[in-house]
Amino acid sequence: MIIILLHLIICDSAIELLPANIASKLNNRGTSKKNPKTINEILLDRSYHHFYMRDLKNGEKRGRPDLIHSSILSATSTPLFMDNLLKVYIHTVNDEVIFLSDGVRLPKSYNRFVTLMAQLLKNKRIESNDEVLLELKHMSITELISKINPDSVIALSKKGTFKPSLTL
Image (cartoon, rainbow, N blue to C red; front, top):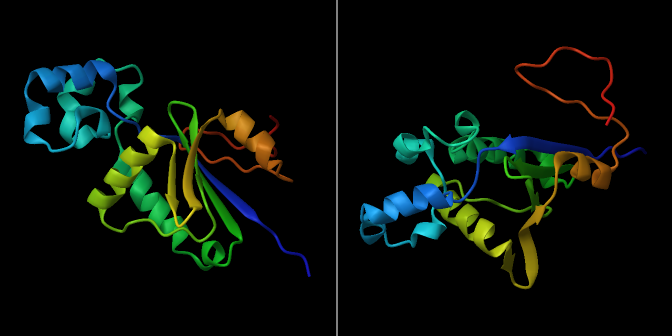
């Protein structure tokens, strides 16, 4: 019996803590007094920070943790993931990779997910009962693929063109 393990990498994910320049603007406006979280524990979110994102480098592909939340929930609710035949990785726009441990269950509530991701981005790991559930490592997409060392790579992009094979 041959068991095939699939690896799903969600590339250039728009999940990050507030950049310093936006955090300082929000702090100056008193936003942190209205929000019980400190300003450095908030995820960049286009829904709330659109006005401040106009001048961000690559601003069009940043600030969408909602997309990651729905994608991850879809992937982790499959029988493949539940049977440990699917490994899921989230590669961020800042060249960081979030590793999900086998069978991890992420919050279905978006607000709880955002809180968890902010905690992960700040502390680099989430643990429960001495088991690492989520871990964040600084790593490029090329380094991640080399670490996984797959037999083949299939890359999908809305701007891409068909190529019979991908070489790294």
